[in-house]
Image (cartoon, rainbow, N blue to C red; front, side, top):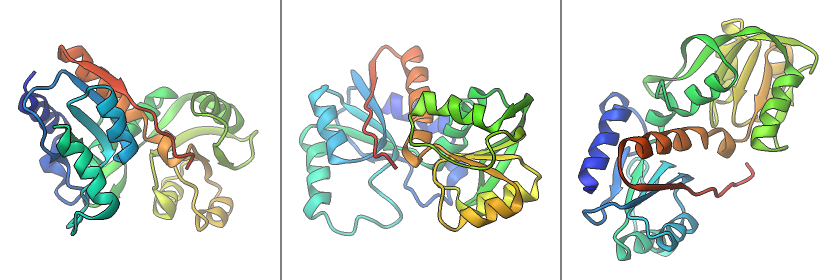
Length: 253
C-alpha cells in the first residue's frame, strides 16, 4: 500500500491535532519509500530496532517512543547519526505516537490494560500536557491485590513491583501506563482509588502510597507500554493487506 495512505490513516485514528502540547513530535518523524509491504511495531526507537526492521524487510516502523522530542535532535552525530543512517539508507519510515497512544480509548496502552481486568464505567484520569491520558473505573467485583499481581505477573513476567497488603480487596482502579509518577498517585488518592496500575514505581511514591492507602502495581515502564502498539498492530493488520510484526526489545525497566 502507499505509505501516505497508511500514515494518513494513523494520523486520523490517533487524532494527532488534539495533542499539540505533547513534547513528542507525533506522526512521521522520518520519511521512507513510497510503498509499504511490511510494518513493524515496537515500544522504543533504537538502533537495535531499526536493524531488526532491516532484517525483516520492513518499510515502516511504528513506535511509542520516537527519536524526535521537542527541538531535538540538534546535531546528527554519534549514535544519533547511526540511528538515522540506518533508516535513510534503507528507506524506512519512522512513525511515532506518544501521548496519543496512551490516551486512545479503544487500542491505547491504558485502554487495553483497563479492559484486561474488566474495568467498568471508565472515566478520564490523569491530566498531562493538556490531555487526559489514563482511565479510572471499577471492577465488576472486588479482587484481592495479590490476585491482580499474579494476573499481570503471568502476562508480563516476574518483574512487577507491588505496594500494599496482598490480601486487601480492590474495586476502584486507576490506570496510567509508563511513568505517571507521584502526580498520578496523588490524583488516585484524591479520587478514593484503591489501586494505581502503572509502569514505574518511583522513590517519591513509596511513603505516600503507604500513607494514603492507595496500593500500587508497577508493571515496568516497557511492559506497560507494549499493549498499545500490539493492539494498534492488530487493527492495521485487519484493515490493510500488509504484513505486520511486533518486535519485542524489553529493557527490563
